[in-house]
Image 1 (cartoon, rainbow over the protein chains, first blue to last red):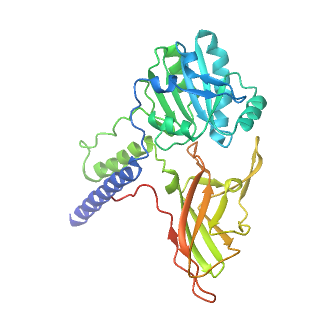
Image 2: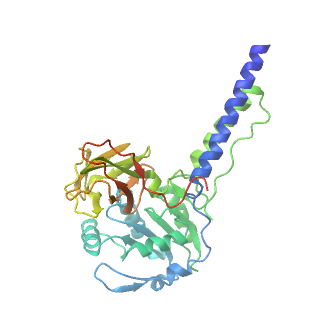
Image 3: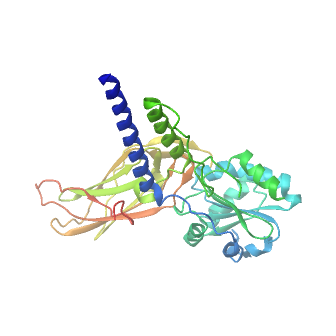
Length: 178
Length: 180
């Protein structure tokens, strides 16, 4: 019987170590976890940022639409990978009141040339590091990209996402809101 | 709120793991291990920028600084985005090892570094025994599908005298500490 007890003890010990490691790991990454976003997208809608040609564009102009604000950059490969999918969704749901708006943490000329190369069918604005700070207040504590905020027609934050949005997931969100 | 258990980080919280208490002995322990693993697999595991790319430097001789990035598993740095400077300067051209080349449809060929990057920085007007501050700007991404904005990290060190032994590495102080 003792060997069985030995095994039991070893398993218990392994479990305890695994749990402790899990707890420690979580503590290490706790400040990386996004908090619940504010329910109100007011700060975002009150924002005005220049487009790549330098004209100030208030985000409030899209209030009343299902607004998907995507923070991105030309130096961010995963950001660029998901943009063609956003373009398709903009194409499919634009007439139903869906509006994608990009906020690029980048230089205007790079944004302009990439938007042209891609044939971007939704507006993108240019924000500096101030825009990253804004995204932090919306739950992007790491200030990393891509970061996407979905607002309903009333301007409420429905979803925030750090990292790429899965197509099926995004479709489900959109269908629920348009 | 739309539920979202996938990808790098969403605002919705994952559900807790399995309930192991009906299983006997070792199986319960194994289930617990699995449950802990599963729960953490659903949560974002992203490190803050300065921990994903931890910078340190040391003086290896009277006119050379050896800079080092300890790059966490699953993260990579772009060679093109690296910038170094020193105060007081100037700094000669940084000696970088070859990175891994990959094709980017927008940038063309890009070189990336993983695990560890060691860079030699020649100090053109070095003064051994006096403090010098080395600044490194870097930009990298995580395989989970996010990129971090460029960050500047700095360390202050002292170069050894001519013929002296290399100094100990000095780590860039992170903004937050793990153990307060």
